[in-house]
Image 1 (cartoon, rainbow over the protein chains, first blue to last red):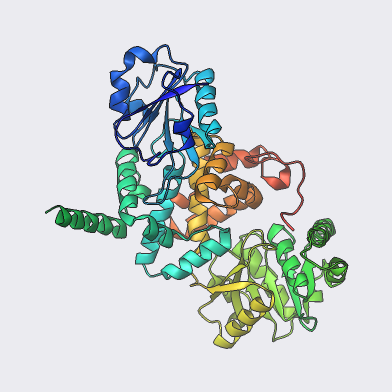
Image 2 (tube, rainbow over the protein chains, first blue to last red; image 1 turned 90 degrees about the vertical axis):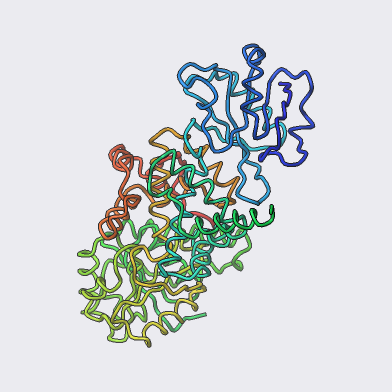
Length: 221
Length: 291
């Protein structure tokens, strides 16, 4: 399946050149909207949408249902995001978002394009946080709160989770490395969407966010 | 090698069998108890198969598996634990059952025998309180699968003597494990995080966020976890997850620790995980994990 990329501003999924770009063609049949203004570019291209075998829109923290009619489609439009934790490089995982009415051929075509570029695809429904952010943010918040409560040191907590579960990183070291303020940004948005206390940003993340903004404001002035 | 010391394990479920493998592999005389002979025979077969595979994969010298298994005694009599240096209880999470076992052990074991519980949620101090030897009692929480994971969360109870804790710590190191000292709080460190995390992922399946296969693939690919959370849950078993939730939620009232409705439905359907051949995934056999 051939596809073309419509790039609209910087992309968190693809900050650098990737095989997914080199394998695209200018007149490809599938349409992939990439960049943090992807949704706006998609809306400006509605006349091309109906005839495309699939359309994929890069999502931020929002749901696909923000950009299309969440009850009626079109049925060839999917959302996607290449999972990336804060300042770490993007992972190989693409979360491909489908709606209940998404056509199977469109889903298969989009999946094939990502997989042909060496990416791994997990399909999910159109839920806040998709798979990974929905799952890991409460865990990270709990780790930060446990640290605040003084029930274990950061090192003991990280060591226990690494040795006990075979995780490559403990949560505290991971959040510090990738940017605690990024965690705040994601979990705050999920908290607003889901209204569940587990997503409420932990104090340490909120502090990191404020500090990050103060430093950026200082740098700007 | 530790041929002069004897370790007893009570309970031959997944954890008990794994701990018994660890003890026997480290050179301890190992005794494993259960009420019924058939589960014990299954445990012996699983341990032998695991060690044989370890030899095949070059992780143990040729013939070592047979030597180790010669130190692996199964029994349905707790009196066979009389001369143990350490007894590790690994039965299900029920305080009354644990108290009953330790009461019987206290009557037959040498006064110097250290008692340990592999509990993952119940207070060590509470279990020790019904053991008859609260000063010689520690928490030793192994991780699943015990035969592969090095971490042991070690917790003293309020009345555990420092001498006992130091002796148990040394025995843990002699087992080839890596002890980490934790406080006697619900779930210690590991399960404080893991039980709610698992409940979250079970709820995601129930809500239709993604299939178990897609969730496990995403977690392994993006986070580098060796097992997807639903694969790990299938090893834990739905019946065990229910007990863990009941114990943890009963103590903490943390909403994320409450047992998801899907767990009870899966238990009702006989989809317990690896042990029943089907959980979130389907399995051809219930061979013990790894080598």
